[in-house]
Image (cartoon, rainbow, N blue to C red):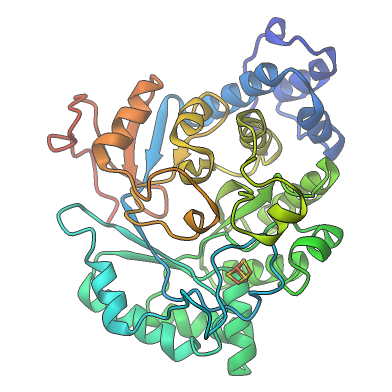
Length: 395
Ligand code: SF4
């Protein structure tokens, strides 16, 4: 349930926000109608100030990040023709199609040589030749080569795909992958749950109810997961609220989500961007900040709200640290999926860059593990991170 927050209503310029501020002060849960007001209000700074107060009540000035590395083993995907917002996927014989061998995955896993990697974030396409054995073998080999690295892998959509091609239940796939080394799951593939939206942007993709169901099953098995919402395409504000409500309801039921990460739609190099006439016109900083702030206020049962700097830029992510965000995407090393649809951000960030970004917002950086335990703080303000204060290890 929400923590009561201390907040000065004199900071609000939109009178419609006053009853919401009153609820937040009392520690009352916001309704879907309240969330709609937050999405519609022209007073973004007022919405952000409330989200900042809610965030400070939980986390003070601390901002966490993970030393992570993205690995995308295959871009071959059976939904290549139907997810019209995606620029990453390829058909098997299409130019640019790839599927890593085990050796290539292991070589990729060594790319961050010289810097610490504590988490592999592994997602890819729905490839008919990347089934249970492909991923189980990969996870075992990664654990053998990097025994201390956490494996956060496979979206709900990929789990459902593996179950389908292996003729197994999703539950049994999760159990088998956990035995092979899967520790937690990322939150991608959610897009926006509304059936009307999915009909337009991804009509063959796993539906919202099934996405929730895979995450519920994972939580029941003790596998913690993350969740997302893709915004800024054809969805309405009501669709956004419905999506967030479904996430909040599952979190009430299981408590299994670690973090919520809103993801902005990128219109370049995909069919939807052409159809909408939106190429070169990505989401606005205004909308990026609002989605993060509303996530913090409406998802009152989520401890962590994360900004994905690859999608919204590092500049917006830095400002977001005052709009309810307590966690920021980590080092990444080599991002491919959003760069396939025109992301102009770097493909990775170094530790000193992350520290400078967080400190530049007046916040206190802390490196975390994949369960959000703080591993080390950097209280001595040494910019290269080499002399960082080793605070505690959760391992
Ligand atoms: S969004 Fe995912 S499922 Fe859809 S085509 Fe792209 S890789 Fe495949």
